[in-house]
Amino acid sequence: MQVIHDPEAFRHACQQLRQRGRLGFVPTMGALHAGHLQLVRFAGQQASSVAVSIFVNPTQFGPGEDLASYPRTLEADCAACEQAGAALVFAPSPAQMYLPGERTRVRVTALTETLCGATRPGHFDGVCTVVSKLLLLTGECVAVFGRKDFQQWKVVQRMARDLFLPVEILGHPIVREADGLAMSSRNRYLSAAERTSALGLVRGLNAAQAAYAAGEREPGVLQALCAAAIADAGLRIQYVQLVDSEQLQPLSTLPGNVPAVLAVAAHAGATRLIDNRELGEAE
Ligand code: PAF
Image (tube, rainbow, N blue to C red):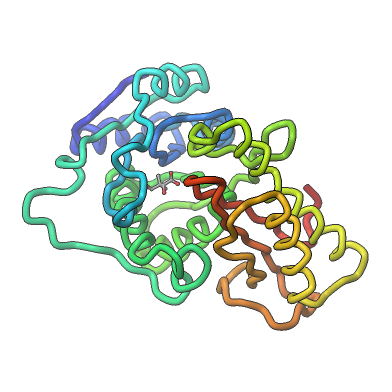
């Protein structure tokens, strides 16, 4: 497996890999866990070879967020990528991704104004900017994103379509720990007590899904059931919102033909966690 830091060398290596067939691409910020490695293996099933990027993108962190403390574990990440079958890791520095004097941001409107976009101003501009740079360097590929970041997946899909990027964007189902907690690089910040409280997220989503399965279709009721379980676990709720799965707009009714997702964000201590459930889908 090759590890490359220079963007142009990465572009060239992707061109070489494409000569073997379809290229898979998994963008990450490192601190890889078993969920990321499932994305790499899944990309390997869709393509002949897989490239992984590892870059803690400064422009998607807001003031007071965890940019400085975000775990950086490049050596272990590379070993894990190799084990998962990646052919190439791209690990640039911030100065290599954001050239001196850079003035370009990529913005997707509307889809970025709800959920995490409403509570993290500028976050999706940072995500879209870095993902478009990464996809332009990678070139034609199938890129895999985790559906824990449901909004990110939908925003990137829209962006790729709107910019005519030669990529297919796939969303991989959420990978969970045995007790149901969605895997996240930020789980490593949790104390034992916070880790227990964090299960309130999946409990809340399960409660809402059970009510949905029993015929409940009132968004307010589903949200309230979910929020109650999250609050009972001692988490500080940022949002519990039922939105349609394409435009990500809040739903005031839940017609049967509209695919919907119940999305949640809450803090366990200082750690912000997100999770979601696509209603109607068995998990
Ligand atoms: O989901 C992430 O890890 C990041 O937002 C991404 C897509 C790698 C962009 O920095």
